[in-house]
Length: 173
Image 1 (cartoon, rainbow, N blue to C red):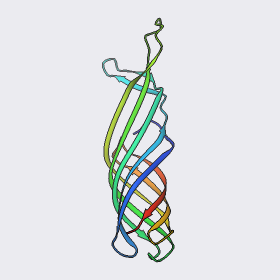
Image 2 (tube, helix red, strand yellow):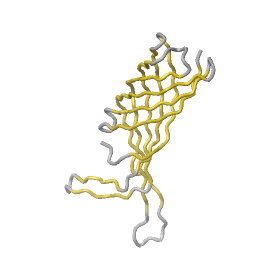
Image 3 (tube, rainbow, N blue to C red):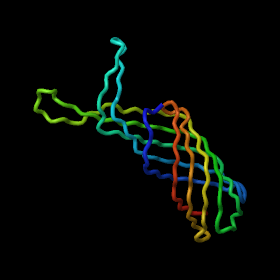
Image 4 (spheres, one colour):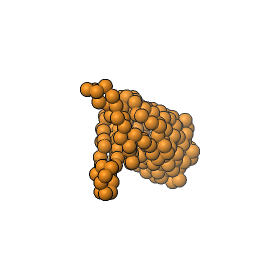
């Protein structure tokens, strides 16, 4: 499990859909989320001495990438100006943790502290997302909308979940 809670952060997605019927669509999304991720210390175990020691973390970051495919069910026909929808997807999720800490010359040194790479960890796995949204037709070819999703990276870093909110711009062919 990830050692701390997420903070607010940005997300973006690029998606592609194909309408199977007036109300059902196959939809795929590539998404990146950049939540705030605060870690104060990295605890490192020493199995030989059966102890741990703590290293201060000066900068931390978490990147989450996903590629998922699933269905979208529209609650109104394609001729409606406002089209609410529900959707569910399954796919690949990747989490990358970056932790940086101080590198100093020691207590007697006059050398200023630099930042060193404490840990870069990447983990791939399976995840799901489910949510809903609304599309509002601006023209026959263009719609704007909102997308709210619960994301669960089931097997990435022991499993974690988060929520994304996106503003959609869609071009229809």
